[in-house]
Length: 188
Ligand SMILES: CC(C)(COP(=O)(O)OP(=O)(O)OC[C@H]1O[C@@H](n2cnc3c(N)ncnc32)[C@H](O)[C@@H]1OP(=O)(O)O)[C@@H](O)C(=O)NCCC(=O)NCCS
Image (cartoon, rainbow, N blue to C red; front, side, top):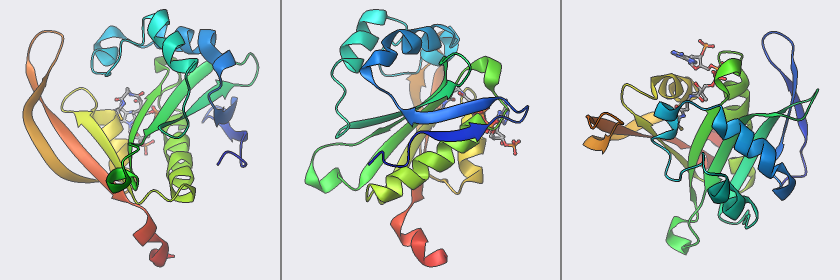
């Protein structure tokens, strides 16, 4: 699954970055990464990744069969500056679907790292036999991610009205977008 890694990419300003699978040795770097993500963005994650105990529990029990985590690492010092995860359910009826969640260090945004990571994840998902990628975006909060996904042919499938609450208790819509993979092969 990971034979193509590590892969070298370059930010817009020429900083060399490596994309590679997350490994248990990354625990501290991953905790440092999530500590740099603003509270209002972390709020919408399904786990409290600001809590080192949660990260530790998760990373020490990595199961690539369920979650495939790819990180973007600054080459000069090994710091993690981006993280994307593909989640898959074990059930046969859902094995062809993966949910995607991406996050880039705020200091490195708008440097094309997110686009590189999304493109790489799409290719990886295709190699894994995934047919549909699903991504969820909170309206008014994750619009940058939604734009980026739209540019890569994710299409809106559903809107769950007032589905999540933000930190201030305000209800926000959850937008579900999908990208069909296997069938796209015929486009080439
Ligand atoms: C979404 C995210 C990963 C993008 O990462 P990034 O490295 O900044 O992305 P890129 O530099 O590759 O930009 C890709 C596209 O995103 C869009 N984009 C990025 N930042 C944006 C912003 N602040 N406002 C509007 N659009 C933005 C643009 O369409 C851009 O395309 P362009 O370069 O042609 O203008 C990053 O903003 C992030 O981590 N956001 C918080 C987490 C999140 O919302 N995750 C979504 C859940 S799946």
